Image (cartoon, rainbow, N blue to C red; front, side, top):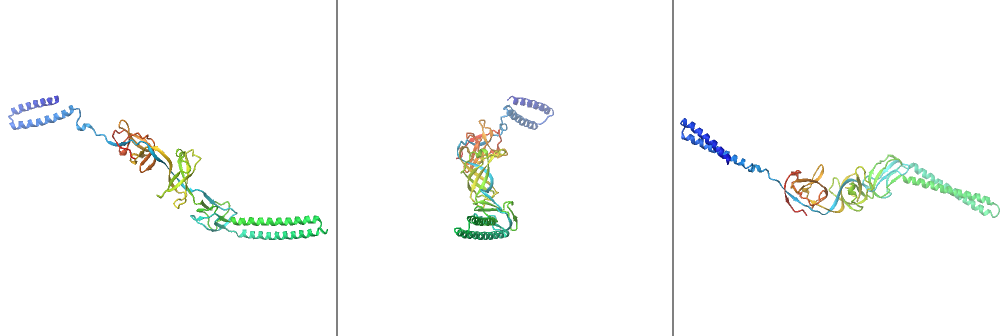
Length: 396
């Protein structure tokens, strides 16, 4: 209260001076009382200021803003289904290009369209065969002529054999006639082989399906000239079977095996299709460090080869922390959570997420499960902020 005594002494001297002046000038008592009241008010204000100054700024304004309270949880570890997410293209599991097997020519008819189902050996298109038909008829006639020569040679041989016992025909004549008969029979076989070859060529002018399946594409029209050097005229999916070519990181690929199930969702639809891994890539791309997983799918009109799809592959169960979606955030660096350390300061922790379910998000790496993880309000915090943590129970 020393400061208050100083102020009182100052105002006492001031009032004495005023009284002496006023007394000299014969001022009335009313004005003197008014000055005394004003002086008292000023002394009270200064006394309050001095009081708070002497307390070292311990007033309400000096206490600063209160620390925010955040809810935290120690999630622990529990068994969760390990799902691996992947993207890739859809394709025919066994795509068959169909082209010209013979000498080709002018296409006369195209009998199928993309989307048609065909059976094995079904004609897809025909090529003009007028010249080949005439050649086939010519060879058929040659067979008839060769057969006639063979019959004549056989008859002459039989007559000569009857006369050889009487001495009218020598043994040398018999041998010559036998050779003539054999040559005639060989010509018959030759003509028959040539005729069969021509018929086979005629058959190859019909462009046929090598296996039963689905026609995916058609690249030929009537009047088009085709040959064995032409590109594929049709593309087919054997049996209509489809697949997804999923690209996965090397580490994820190592956890998979043939026969595991996958859920495939084509882009543009909410319908998912169940498939199975039927082949794992034996080679890893040295640049991307990725490999291909081939997921077999049954035919459906929503599965269009060349389309894009997403897949979730079940790869067993893992022990991992499970957090609600509100606790996991993401930015350009990836997914992360905020934890509160022993000094009640906010710390960023980068994490790798796994399966997402109604129970929460599995954290595959980045957490041990014993940390105090901020459940919500992470968007309003920054690393290094000091908070008051309030413990909550882990979500089941």
